[in-house]
Length: 319
Length: 287
Picture 1 (spheres, each protein chain N blue to C red):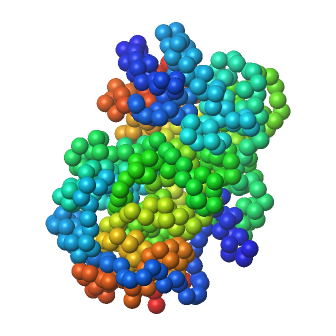
Picture 2 (picture 1 turned 180 degrees about the horizontal axis):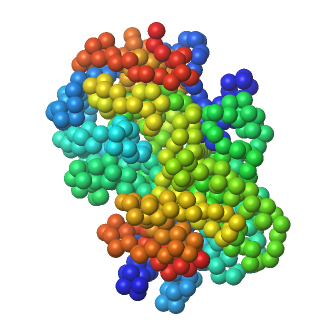
């Protein structure tokens, strides 16, 4: 075990320590073909987000007719002056989008990692007030019924919420944020909220014991029927994902290949995705290399916004 | 008080599953956590005797060979809710073999931060997460680090277990567990899940975990808890979370501070934990 790996595994006991990935080995080429990722400019949350998401869905060729759709926002903690959570306006627009696409059912589900009272958190983030009939379409994934899956991080069984396992499509409504351990938290890291606190606790320390990067990669593998909409209208930089500063990037990023969506978001943020360990671990199932990502809508260059990084993440800065 | 308790007791009796347990919400799969809280809430209520016995039998059937309890029928793994079961046995004065095995599991379980690997890593980079790894406390599940909530529940269970007879191991684990809780107190005076400072940044406390930390510390008269109890009272007045408010009621009661029960809320009617905790807080059945 190398010194760095030793440190990661040890400190993971109380939280986690990743500090990016310094590897310069070539990253996997990914599956054949290309992945479409749509970048849409949105100056503020009062923009026509429903219209923008419809355009993004068309650009990505998204189909949802007859599907049971689970929208998974990033609802972590609440602070009135911070951009921690997926903005409610993006969720409202997503509900409208999937209903207009003919989804059989549109649910919203989240299992916050620190706070026990998910509903109270949803209230603070204005989800309950703004989203029509919120209580009837929201599932607290921390306290949902669960079923075992096999092959997660070499564990004999790993338990996940039935609402997520039974969904035809899980839509990661992520927030564009830096992450002090993983480098960036985007559509794939957002799946940590699918893991039930009723089994794994608050925080879900088992994921840290497995390793944050490995856990991100395995969750992405367990839930392949997914789509990503990343809220980068106002993201977070610096000491994310909770203590950082609001950072306006003015974009929504969408696509059905979560690896490509996250790689694109990283480049927008000024982060080299090939330096993030979880991107390397997922690169066989999606596209990280820019030559294999078909950028639709805006170009990365036109929306580039350099997100501030803490010192321990300077090695993941895009050069 | 009966106006407050009656609808909540009715709710628990009406939402008990056919297997004898309770789900987090009505009609959902039985879980040990809501079942244990419901049983603690009902255990002194004469009108709930049949409900209690059915739930008690289910709870007892979920004990694993190592003495721990599993969290629900679907999950075959040891779980922190073992502490709630030991507490319930203590409240009933049942100190039989299942109780002793559960107690034994609690006494032999501790967080990974107490191990050599973590301690060495922490020695190399102490500022990543500021904590003292020498205190032996409790994880959510074996193989994980210690956190405030499972530690608080284990302390409540061990303090109830004292009535079964003296055991120096119990006293030692209580001493170390209380030290861990005191060590993890946030700069604002309360507690969060268990990290007071990460990468040099102070983290804020939460109402619900402040309640649980103080619950775990209850009964130790040598501690001066005036300042954190004031924080808890402020949280009780200000929080909009019915769950946090209910936990604060239970916790403050354990420190002989009675607070006026919260109004019945639509949300509370649907949530087993909130209803059970509101009964426990108002009736004092945990004290």
